[in-house]
Image (cartoon, rainbow, N blue to C red; front, side, top):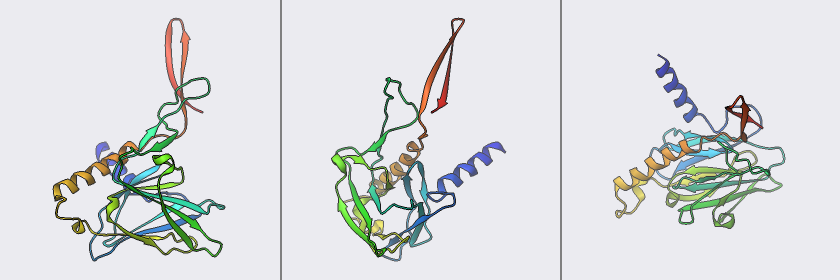
Length: 219
């Protein structure tokens, strides 16, 4: 019974929207350019990760919006980002957390900057990642095939620009179905590795009567 409950709880967490709390939100959507059901798409945003589940030709999602936030980043890549760890000033290793995310230099990706104008519309720019690999904190990461992105446009106020993607069948004949499935499976597994606690944890050692007690405390 416990294993079944644990399974369904895990499934709920993975299929939950980007956030599950009250507050101000931006609302986004991913649409197919043809009448084709979209696959589930792994995501990561500010410590939340899981799967965006489709409703046939569309996926909808929401992300928290800061009151003064006028810029947002969207990264579509088929390669799992690398967490970069950090140390405190005294050299203590902060475990089970990371300072920022990076992509490998040979990663296949598309990176978009959304900037909101005073009239509520969104200006969309495609750029390279800072220093070629560093992923900014305010980035919605979608683990999907970047070559299938057809266009991104629209959006007004809290409604983000819509991401349009071509179906898998539109890929060239030179790309085998087996290769595509392998890439998609790797992306679904990759989002699990991003489920990392973001509160810095210090490892404390207490010595007493020649016994060592190791405890992890949140700081």
